[in-house]
Length: 187
Image (cartoon, rainbow, N blue to C red; front, side):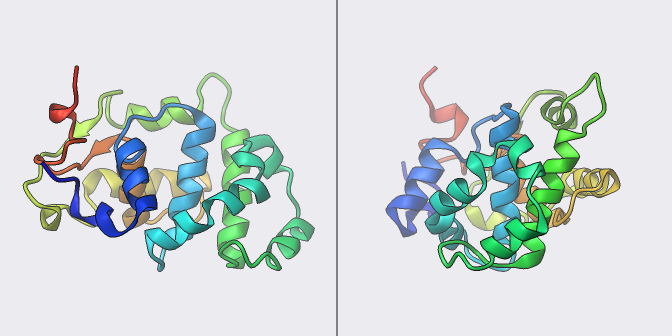
């Protein structure tokens, strides 16, 4: 068996693929981190994002929602001088905005519960034979994107959200001959 073809480009990509991608994630802080990473990736390579992940974690307090939500425009100005991260003003502002949306979530529910309700709390397994079959988006991603925008999230287009759903394990797109496909993992 061979892992999904996209993951063979570097050790960092392999580690991300083998240990994170497609694994169901329910922790709100981790869900927030992955959302942010997907927004940074828009228009760039995933390798670029992974290379800058540690610096992003440092600059955004390991994506502690409350700490990020409390950041100001002065913090954004400081971040724009940090060459270790992707210095894109709108993406950095989206990180803070999205933290505020999650922080201010209506009482009685949380972001993780809301997100997983789109798939009835069960990952969707799409058993593709080849990575070439995997779509850039689908109806679910379009629906989630639309609802996230309605709630005030930024940088959450359907393609970004499809990647996010893959990353967080709501959709499992490991190809069938990948050793990390759910049917190939030990019970």
